[in-house]
Figure (cartoon, protein in one colour):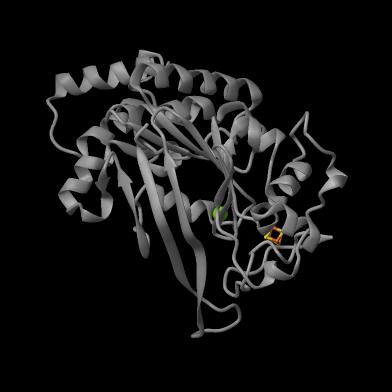
Length: 332
Ligand code: SF4
Ligand code: MG
């Protein structure tokens, strides 16, 4: 399959004021050379601890900001090459779902108006057609038509999420980016939304990217998952491989530590995740996980491991996996 979205060596660095100073600034390297493909109709998951660069990568994927270096190619079109107007037209195709549109929009906006707005930003639409399209979008996400003129303050979080989905759907997207979208919901609401996502996927050929810290949810929903650490991807594998045959020491530690994850291939004590990741301001040379890795050996502190395919479809960045004989003897 041709990828729907291709992320090519994306980098993003921010300038941030050094704590306790007024005018000393430092570079925070939030995303450091990330490359991966999102395939049509897959549910791609991105996981990692807070501060790993997930939020920055999310903004890059949604092209809310451009990478400093690298590019994102959507359906064969480089986003970097688009003019402002072309970008507005293209934006309907790949959208970041608002966490809570109720908080993002003026408080006295009706449900119908919130969904309309999504279309109107892109040009004039005759009133009658507008109403029809909004009603159709509401029906598609399971919002009753009587809510059209209601204010959303009485709605549940799940219903508000549906508004957000309707706002996206009305623009006929190909890719939806969901940043912690299911995290705030209780189990029942979550299950209902997962079902809705699957129905919409079948019907509209949708592709999803789920960015989340919630491994149990990602395991339920995603077909392929990428694990981020300190601005890089350390492992990308399909669902079963990632959860039952993880290759990277960080992935193993992350799974061991996940409190809500049942039925794991190893016990929490097998891989302890101790300490904090290094600061994204002073990133040491070599493997970024070396300071916490129980298997680290000499080469790890000098040479950065590259993300490579070690099993069909499974990529990981770790020297231990490069040459099993070398790694094993060096780690012993
Ligand atoms: Fe651990 Fe070395 Fe592998 Fe990094 S490269 S994860 S430090 S063994
Ligand atoms: Mg973050």
